[in-house]
Length: 85
Image (cartoon, rainbow, N blue to C red; front, side):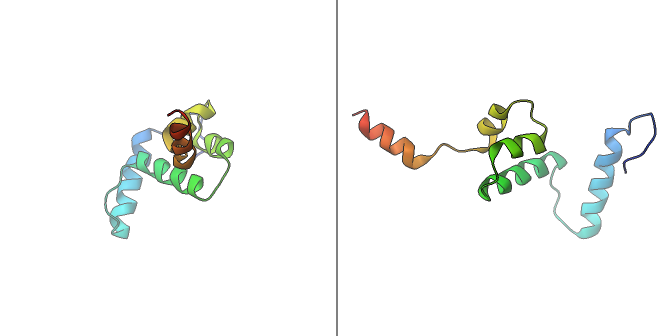
């Protein structure tokens, strides 16, 4: 779907192709944007470094990636809460 044309491709072209592709494969509907979330979550779960995930997602700042996809470390949070009491 990528071209060497000077004119950019209309985003709906990708969306429509994606919808048709998913239908042809018999895969339940998932918004295209959801793929990015799934990808990021799986990368983080696979211990991919956060900076790499941030770059792959096109985030301009790693804090965006950290805020959206990296849950707080529950063990560290529990220790912190215990020491505060």
